[in-house]
Length: 343
Image 1 (cartoon, rainbow, N blue to C red):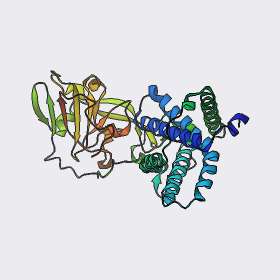
Image 2 (tube, one colour; image 1 turned 180 degrees about the vertical axis):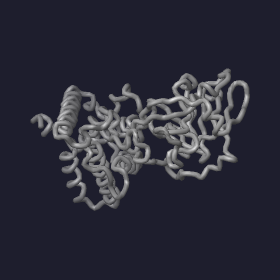
Image 3 (cartoon, rainbow, N blue to C red; image 1 turned 90 degrees about the vertical axis):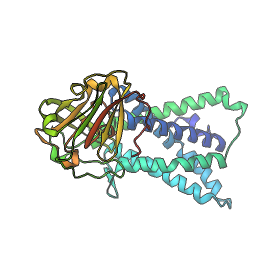
Image 4 (cartoon, rainbow, N blue to C red; image 1 turned 30 degrees about the vertical axis):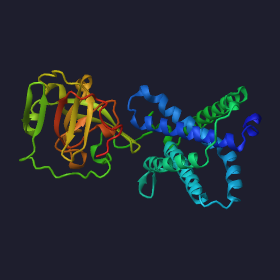
């Protein structure tokens, strides 16, 4: 490590630097989960660099923690829990990115990483409030800027070294996609994982009762599955799940654009599942969407969205709505929805 970095941080500066690094890691991590296009690669790289900055700050934070343990504070157990979650987040993230830890306690390593990070947030906010430090004029000094630059450079170098080592060593993480996901089940539908968002379960759909409801600028109409499947077309697309895996598949289905008779004054397309799950897309993306009836030349399995699921190239898996029963043009803007689905 650079000799200037070894001696550069006081306890206060350590806490501030670590807080900023954790905030950046959380912000870029949120972006990394959302991005499905290669244009968002920089967000994933930024997340990795922020994580390396956290790792570099551990020695200084360790000294701060040791001093704090010598004081009889009631809140120290909460502080220790915060430290434990931070370590768990880092270990699970490194394990997932290198491919050395694919699951923890039966859960995907990436899910453990995300869950620990989410649990970390309220404790981090509490810690920042309880140990708040007032801004000082010296916080904007040239020396502080130099130290921040050195830390950023060291974090970037450590990220590049780690990434290169993973690839040169032939570790599983060397083959991961730019999102960090590992390939599972490409062109082999039975072996592709089935991930279900939060409390959703794979429903039993009665085809005698099921209809696809389409609402466009001309009004509403319904289609049976045979009517939907009568005008299908093939599409090769990559499903990249936020659980940490991806798969290339050949899908067969009906383009959403062929079902829309008139866009009218709509600003978004709402895609709804029989489970109540929904997602909203900008109208200018309609031409890219497919309602799939089959995958790999065979009808969709129930766990993969039978009778109908959305295929949204360039979007992460949580956009690919399963068990679709309604597509509806609306005047609401596409951003009028939670950043990540809550139902």
